Length: 144
Image (spheres, helix red, strand yellow):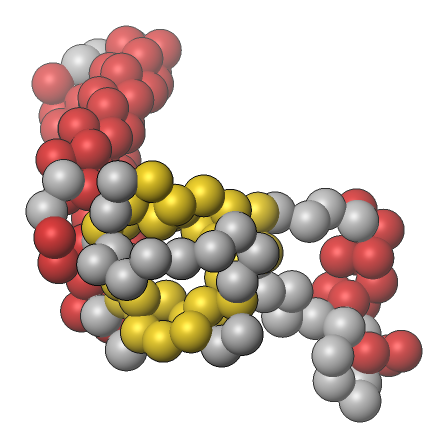
């Protein structure tokens, strides 16, 4: 189970909207001063926030801190689809294009088109999976 703390930003008709900030994996350890990755994350200064809306039977107050969770298998399956499918299509399309086309520019065009189509397929799959309950985060407990 992957858990994260989030802040309730809206509650209406049995649905709660929470916002959580992406964990900055760098900057919290003792090696921060000697780490190039931490220096780069400080340089960009980006703070990414994510919002999730999901059903909740308990009434919530705006500003409450809650803990939300997502099963690890769901996250692993989504990562596998999102990363592996386009990569496999890229590799296979290079070989197929090399076999089918004599000109290199044709192979490149075929590979780019195939990989772009793979990303579209990933987006469609992602949209369908978001509708399923097991791919939705859910409330574990109230913190404050």
